[in-house]
Length: 144
Image (cartoon, rainbow, N blue to C red; front, side, top):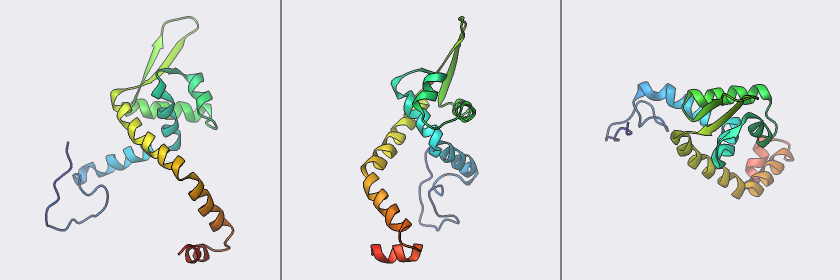
């Protein structure tokens, strides 16, 4: 579904979701929450090279617990962003891969990661300045 065309009338709710039907708002916010979740971002990014086994995903996602990885994989599978394929082998083998829909999310995630990398130093400097300023209002005045 395409976004609603903006008319000359004022919208009751302004903001990023206002161009979509109001009844879609909750689901859109849930999708944004999922897509913006740090673990989901890292898992989807890891799968860009192709299907991976659970242990490979665990190794490629520093800091994630087994429980959180399992939870994240289930959420991504529920949303249709990844597939889970179990092979009838001994020992059992399970692989996760991006779906076509998941690959479209990868484009946005890659842009976000590139933005974070490009602005890393500037953001780190801002954090240091803020943390060493004493109060948030002093930091804001100093940067103007």
